[in-house]
Image (cartoon, rainbow, N blue to C red; front, side):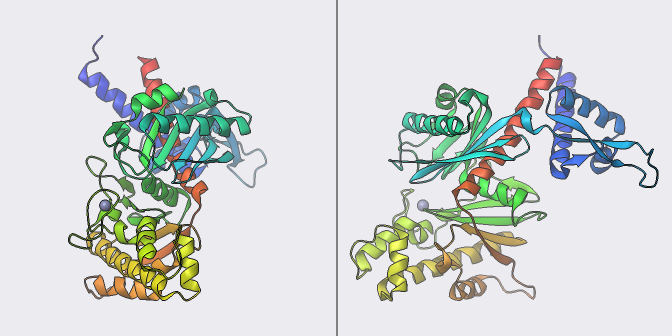
Length: 405
Ligand SMILES: [Zn+2]
């Protein structure tokens, strides 16, 4: 039966309220109904109805708070609402070049287990990619005495241009093909809903929820690993662009017809700063034999190899120029540089910061703070799990509405 537009609008409105209530409970950990009503500027009756729905779906539970009156022993304990951690298990997955990191969390985001799976191939055909994700998840669940069917959702972070709403990959350095709709392949490979998201966006989400971005409205996260990624949190929300192709900081052009980038174009920032670019240049220029990894170049530079020093210093200057462009464009509260400890010090040296300063349009106000956060792959996966929790919440609230009709 066709639903009328008015009834569908009312359902949307109820779902929005349920999700806002769920977010408020998540943000505060435990909160009373009346405090939710105040925080959301909504009537207590609306909140009572929304929380009843969430309770019946098992997404939240009641818990006892402190008595309302400290002096009176007979003061009734306040009834608070908290998330029901055990109601769902969600997996966050980060696909890097040489490994897949998996983290299993409960609905509250508490870690149940984490697992690392080595990768033989950095680039895979789409079917091999989803098969590999499945076996990594199988092993991760098995190690935690769970099975794949226990999962309510999986969020997978990969580098590249991703339309997260459609699970569509325009381009990724993890896939051998362009324009891949991963939805049918993921449905075939996994028994639960799966969501694909750009990995830098997941780090931005993790920074916003648990890291240096907590409480900030507008900030940028630049991720540094094999490539360079950017997550934009604008007015408290992730900004993805209309087609999911925004925030491609690594492919910002810094040189007309410059070095060849792995995206196929020339002159991208990543073609000067990405690990592959450094290895390419150091292979030609270094006095040492065939650097295989960034740490080979870093060690050579530390040992005084002048050409390795020059490769890193040029990368730093290009990066500094890129950061000043970001500041000129966004004027953010802060920029967080995120990567593995010991791997990108040359990208936030004093010389790089001087380059940033010289590239920012000069005003009589201090520059946005540039902070450094050292995160390993497990934290990327944690961001993926946070996004997974959000998506599972949306699905479960939609199911609630569908069951009520
Ligand atoms: Zn590029």
